[in-house]
Structures are given as structure tokens and as C-alpha cells.
Image (cartoon, rainbow, N blue to C red; front, top):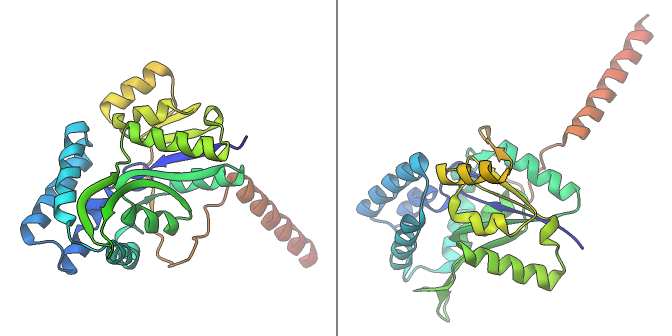
Length: 260
């Protein structure tokens, strides 16, 4: 059976809330007013400082559904794709990219699992080299406009239900799989796999991780992915770096001997 690696997005792969990060782009496109922008900026500040608990996530979900009613799904995804270089490129954690690359090299499937809308998560995941996503889906009408209702909420137990459905369909071993998250709201996801990891954890998740003996990772190195690629060049593994250094050293020795 194949294994997988499931990465939460916000504050695990990128340093901010993915949805709030695009608020400026939405305002430029005429989709957000000044008051909504101020609320988004305040929400980003609170999220960065304190994270998000269940009540905050529910409030954000309700507000986003109401705000996005009448927006067109394809237009939002296109807007996100156009803004990736400016908005997301400086926010990606190098440590997350390294781990993603390592899992892919080991033959595991990699998923970005996020409560953010799929119109945000899908292009962002592709941008960093991940093809599979589990994200919130809003209901749309026949013309592709949001109705203000949810089709699937990728949050809490909802994430677990979806990964279990995929695991059963594709014969994945969750016992051999990995999960990474920063938030206690993802405890169901972390407990669903055999190799859970707490990344930049909030206070509650850190306490649980220490009690259960889960690895606690601190991601701090934000890298810039300015090159607009269909699939970014993956972070080079330690073994590849070592091999490359070996080749350079050997070449230097040969040149020195020739000079002699």
C-alpha cells in the first residue's frame, strides 16, 4: 500500500492565512470594499499573533460565504493565479518545501489540506509543486457563481472524512502516512495518521504534541519563489547536495593536478 503526506497550508506551508493574504488583490478587482479590507487586515494580524480557534474559524467561514455570494469561481481562481508571484512567493517556508520534496522522492503522494476555498488552495498548491488538494468547496449555480452555501467544509473531522474516503478509494495506508499542522483544530487530522507532526504549533497543539511525543517542528525560513513555473524546481535533498559538493570537490582536485 502506498503512503501519503498531508500538509495543512496556513502557518504550516506558508506564513500567513492564504485567504486573507489575497484581500488586497480582491479589493483591486473591485470585490472588497474598504471596510471589508480593514476587517481582513485586522483578521490577519490576530491570526498571525494568536492563531485561530474553532469559534474564529466558524465566524470566518460564515463571513466568507456571505461576502463571496455572487462572485464567480473561475474569476477568483484566475485572480489568485495572477497574484501568486506578489502575494505567496515571499511567504513559503523553505522547510515545508524540503519536506514536500522528500516525501515525493520517497514515492508518497502529497496533499495540501486546507479550510481555505479550493479556488485559493488549488493554484497555490500547483505553484509550489503539489498536484493534489483537499479544500473547502462552495456551492455554485449553473453559471459558476457562488450561491453563499457550502458543498464541503474542509475543517476538523471534515478533513478526516475526506482523507479516509481517498485512502479507501486509492488503497492508501494512513498508518504509514504523515500529517503536518500548526493548529489544535487539526488534531483529528493528526490523529488519523501514523506519523503526526506539529509545525509552529499553537499553545494547545504544542501541549498535546509534547504529551503524545509527537515531533514538534519550527519553520522560520521564508523563501522567495519569484520564477513563474508550471511546476517549481523542488528543493534539493540533502543527499543531492552532498553528491553535488562531491562532484565539485573532485573537479577542483582534477584542475589542481592539471595545473601542477
